[in-house]
Image 1: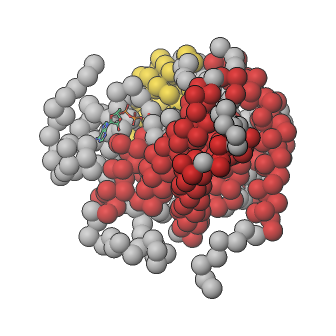
Image 2: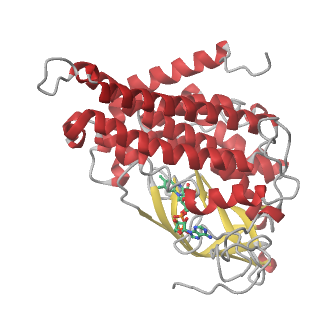
Length: 445
Ligand SMILES: Cc1cc2nc3c(=O)[nH]c(=O)nc-3n(C[C@H](O)[C@H](O)[C@H](O)COP(=O)(O)OP(=O)(O)OC[C@H]3O[C@@H](n4cnc5c(N)ncnc54)[C@H](O)[C@@H]3O)c2cc1C
């Protein structure tokens, strides 16, 4: 009896506590915010709900106990994420991006850096602490591990040794939370930067913390169609000076990116499951009450009943894959890069289709804003595109692991450890072979 899908008493309590919060606190706030035409106003409207989540310990639950966090496991986190996302996926993204930003400091930072930034996050007196995870760029996210220095990440951090500082110049596009509640910056922005202009992405990248209030930054909010309750920005860096001691993972920023997007992958997958479940609950209720002008509720029709069973089966399968991926990460110190990426790709794509099928059950009224179904679609369409993107970064990561000579197909089912290494990076950036270090053939300005 070693395979056990049973939630512990604490996990059941977590699930139903988060469900209650999602239904009672989050739903009304998210409904109001989602209807706002101004993207920043929609984000700010979620602040009271965020403060309540902070008070409950939810907003910092994934951080280690020794620094004041909740010490939640990845399995705990996917359970909580599904519950939040069944109601509003944008809000869950605010919390999860705090994890994407702060956990790299836990994994790759020094003790001093952990003491400084993790305890600041967990002990925030105003209970509204935001961490920004600042990676994506207009031209170079998917190929961050490209071997040529002019490809991939181009936010440059010049080492001004005389002043013991790094000077950052460039632009980031899409980081979540990074602008902060007032567009004067998140409390802690963890940025992936290029510290070496002569080497490729597997040697030249590092992470640097930019504190709120640092001069030289500008933020512009992106007006996106889904997950409107979280904030995404374009962030411009103009001679932004940060102390040397804010840098970590020098030359290993690629590993930071891969590990962080491995941690978030089962969460993003559970988020997709949550949205699909929300759509399924809506469609099931609709099918049991709506007659479509016939003599019985539409669930009495075989076509509708069969489709509902397929929808439910795909949600169940997706959920258990999230649990497995999270469990594997818990057991192997976050080293489950291929399984987590497969989980993200599979669930995000599948759940988008599930939501479309739920809309087919509801029929044309799924398109009418007043019934509230279209929000599930606007959210589901985000999942294959965000959190490192399915086509590029996530699939390339699984591919690199599988190409390793030591990889075996039994690895995950047997729950064997398998560490991620730099040799697994760079797959697909040059049309297949990481060994080919030729300059990129196509460059956009
Ligand atoms: C709600 C939301 C929250 C987000 N939060 C953050 C955040 O906190 N921090 C952050 O940094 N970013 C964030 N992003 C951006 C997000 O992580 C994107 O997934 C990331 O920017 C990658 O985008 P992309 O894959 O479209 O990359 P791009 O580099 O824009 O690539 C464009 C297209 O080309 C394809 N492509 C390019 N190169 C290859 C290749 N070598 N192989 C295969 N396909 C390739 C990609 O797969 C993609 O289809 C967020 C986005 C959203 C919508």
